[in-house]
Length: 360
Ligand code: ADP
Ligand code: MG
Image (tube, rainbow, N blue to C red; front, top):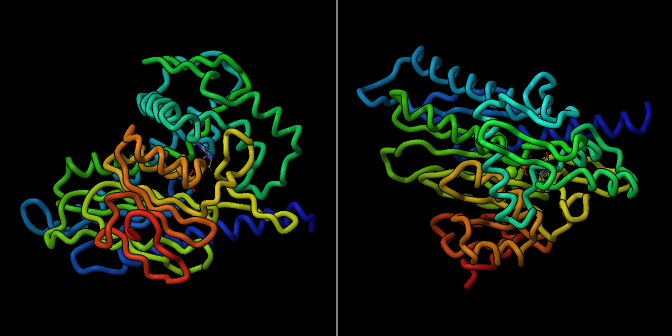
């Protein structure tokens, strides 16, 4: 077997394991619970759970009604995936990423995700960059690499950057035919929010949904306590390092353990620093972001990972976007922003030390 093939298998296994563990690591949310029905799917390249309350706005909801709602939620994901996924060969992003100069008739979904992405790219000084397609294709992390040459990285970098795209109200213009968008760092957050918006039109009273590392909370739980959500320990295959207790909004986690391949003993993960063209080496292992907006939570968890602790905290203090975060550093510290007190995040693994708001 070629080494490329072996590496590919290692990566695929790592992803499958990580994804399963992600669900397990959310055990606080997804251990069976009497008042809910859980519906599981695989969509947008990840494991998805819709946990819907059986309690409706006018009494108990039937199994068949809940199943119908869950299937509609899955349909929403499928339609979003068609519009924004780089994986679906027949989708809209595939046409945008082909050598066109201008794309007319893009869906509202694609235009809305691109407009939001463009705004967040500018606000984060390019740490979140939706135009990295040429680079992420080159690194092929999900396919197991291999590590590209410095020359190929430099070449791909000349075909990235928000200046390569002009996103209008109806059209998308490319100033560089080779440039490609990659919406992998924002799509799941957008989809999580879209599902919650749909749920608000149904009879379901409250729900929590999980799409890979993205969680969205809908409605108000009658006990007012919210949901207990485990944060995975980046160093342990099945360990949890702490728990969030959250009543509303969105949580998104980005980490170097989610998707990666290894070559010559080095781990190459899937979060790229647009400034270097290589996996971000920012001194962080994982970042969890809490926000009232799904796409922002998703994009920011990736952006803060790229920024590293110092810049991420500076960005937080600039208040250009409202969010709270927990940063896990490579030297075993857990840095929390100002509003994350012990009632929002509780560290359970004492191999880590609290620093930031909770330690003060
Ligand atoms: P996941 O998709 O595993 O939940 P993220 O939300 O952090 O993780 O998104 C990472 C994905 O986003 C990568 O797989 C890649 O497709 C894309 N990406 C990588 N680096 C960046 C970046 N700096 N800005 C925007 N997108 C990125
Ligand atoms: Mg993200």
